[in-house]
Length: 188
Image 1 (cartoon, rainbow, N blue to C red):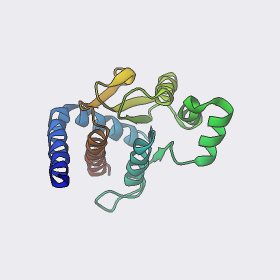
Image 2: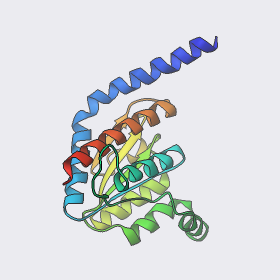
Image 3: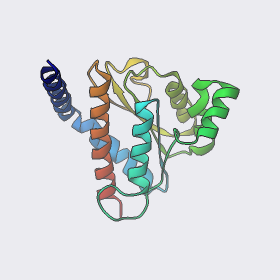
């Protein structure tokens, strides 16, 4: 019984990954937005909740450190890493303000904000997107399911059409790795 369940999960993951092929244009556009931002002296900012928070941190580390080759460090920050900010803002202003408040102080015109959400319904990400719009920060949403309330709220949506959170997150990390590679290969 367990082996059938294991094979089922593997098959679901393969099928979800196959669907990413239909998102090539959006992935290319996202890479172009990020490359343009970095080339203009701006930065990539990322955020998400739970597993998506970990992926936001992972992606930022790929840019600041390196992905596959030795190169200069690229400007990137994840809004999920500073526990003092997260807890102070959450306590004083509410959890829905944790990314918005940080973006208000760190985001500048020409930056790119990447919001990761498997549901597309995260109020704190919606608040960050609204803040980004007021500051001239471009927004790329990596979403799941039908895109939720966040669909169409930014400059670009990349949506994994699945109801399974684990499969959505697996596809999101694939896309983030593709983006890291494209950005890394395009930066001099």
